[in-house]
Image (tube, rainbow, N blue to C red; front, side, top):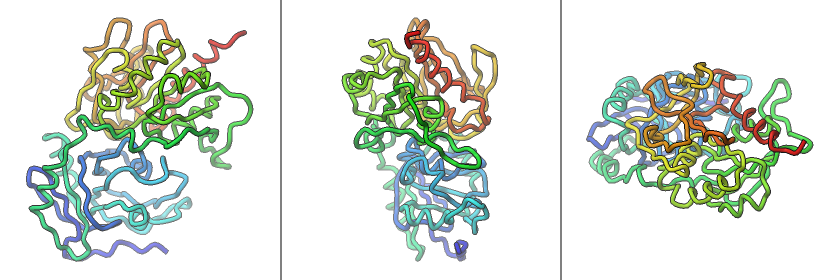
Length: 388
């Protein structure tokens, strides 16, 4: 049985911000030290999905919801094999889990996966600081004996280079191509396999979440996944009926140094194309637009997005620290979606072509089904190209 975190009066973890601010709390998970960008996530559920989402590479996540860890963990909810986020910050220390699907507690899972957690912090104060000052560089340390060289931690946070100009897609992409046929979870059987002929889709893995691939399979796609460094020749050799650009971490301009040429080659072949998150930003770059680093980014499951085509509002899940500059969109590329929080771009479409992308995560289903139509739109675009 999972044991609750043992609390002591002496701090066993320290979070050091680059500006010299220190937060002390109770450490859990792995011991040691990590350096990253600090962001906050407002989701009330899905902490395991967040920690295993490759888009969080290079980031420590502060959860604004206090009950993190209550439902434990299960391998079925992993978005990739191991956690990618550098660490987590929570208000209340993880307790013994209570959920019929749980196979382990969050703290022991963090230990096994080599990720550091800190509990007992005023996450409201920390979130306000992130909102006001932008996502800071931090050093997070966990020492059961409570011995911290705070000056060294602050120096480590200040010396960290940050995400701007950093290509992280190469770190989280697959090593080689593979096929995907698992579909979305459904009661009572869980995950099932897609059978029969499907729409031939090549998915470029910039840090793809498994649930995105499941949604493609559920929409009738026969998915082949290629690494982020794949060329247009690699993609077109598979004779795809559609190409998908996945989510992922880091600076899109840095990843674009090698990926933009591939995307331009696919666009020249006039094949339906769909992008999500980093894939959305990469498509925008290939079309001639620009991307910008955001102050604190969008991270959560309650982000309202307006669809200009339908005038409907979708409740979406987001995780991005860069955004497409809508003012830089070239002629023939239309803004289709916009954030109702701050007006930033959340979707584009090439006029007259089945080429589109969104900044948010339709597979995460916070709506819960507000955005699944995007996968169906992609599938319909491919079906329309098939001979009668």
